Length: 300
Image 1 (cartoon, rainbow, N blue to C red):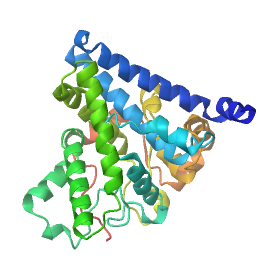
Image 2: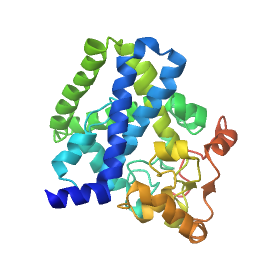
Image 3: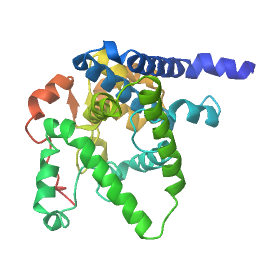
Image 4: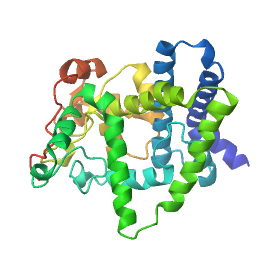
């Protein structure tokens, strides 16, 4: 017990405080939703859901000073109605094979398509993938394309006779039902309101971080960016906007990333080819309706 207390205060205390803030904010938004106008509910709901995604990401890499069952319990509730956490954890760990970054078919989070596969895609899909490379497209269509890709991949898995993910999806379905029951049955928030003003915008805001954090490059060290943002977005993404640090030191707790980046900024940017943005507003100005990169991979 003494050791657990020391670990809590020294290592996992900040992350558990974040978790407490997230669930308190989520509960408050739902409980008092009738008094919150939609134009305020949407950004607040989106922030809380995207923040929860960041918490789940943190639990994959760090947040390891408490028992595994308790860590899972803290991040498991699917507030964003998205991917089962155990499957997200498995997929994201594959993404962290640095030499495979951005490589379609090997990087589970790549937005690229192999050169040989591009001409075979239906015209509509090519158009959608191109639009998805603009920030406007990523924020509006991005969640739907992610859902389409997920459903297609899981369907192909089942069709091939692999039912290993089925238990996770069954548990996830029950958990999603619980979230929606609480929203509708306890807080009297319509399910369409929860999806339209909380879950979907939350996924969109989460995709903002991933919009341009990786690009194809010969040197894998130049494939990961840093976005030097303000406290609002840095807190939202638990400093993974400084993504170059996260890929170099994936187990570094979120609250140490900023200090490390500031102390090593010159070396980090020299290694990643000065792949850096001065805030998300710069990204909005440059890529709101322009493609951040072509979806067809330049080398593969």
